[in-house]
Image 1 (cartoon, rainbow, N blue to C red):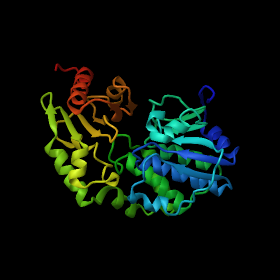
Image 2: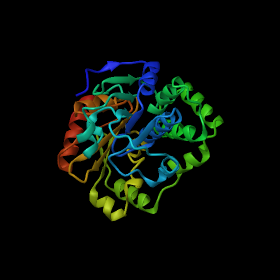
Image 3: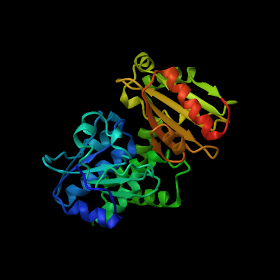
Image 4: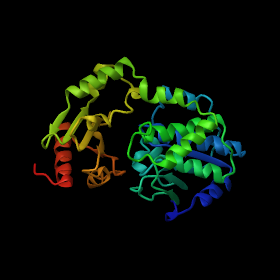
Length: 323
């Protein structure tokens, strides 16, 4: 079992990483650009200091991240120390990874204030992306940026800020992105791959999901279900899933956008996106989840109709309306 959680600084996190020779780096399930960019950047930084490291994800990594995974080296790290990046709760590790490592995490690097403090040591800052925190740690380790590192970090920062559109984008976000561009990150390629390209299956899935979207509370809440049947009918794969949660909030007048994605094992992964009228983290916390003020999530293990009813009841309480 891990010792009680201890909050640490960037310099202490760097020293912790340098103190050991082998590291297994864990991401969250349903991997996105921030968890993957952070993980592969940290993996390369450790390897550049002569240490062994590899990244482990419970789910298959989508093909669009091949530019991160293809050049990465996966070392044998038997008996390694464990670091989790962008993982607020061990429940998010998923499957066998959670079963094997949930109580063994030595270090967590995260930017979610809802972090459940499961690791022995926690580096936690409320910043735009976990990759921004990883960048600070890499600098404290004495590792200089190269194009491969820069692309991994830029992926994390750009995806968690919606290509610098979301409210979590700060002046520091742009400054760090500029630094990564100067270090050789192919930002045009990354931006097109992450934000512009959609498969025909993804377009079909969006069509089905939009057709099923519901509006509640004078159109202030939009709920978009994504069922396994929709995914099958569209011919979609995991690579087509990222970027769906923001869609309901894109509708004019919507305060709270909700996406419910059905899981293969049952139940739904629920994502909340909000603006100034609601706090996504507070809504998710009422349902056992967490995240950020504008983007958060939880899991509801109920049939779709019951899951939607529970979400609406919770959102109503949060925004002060009657059912």
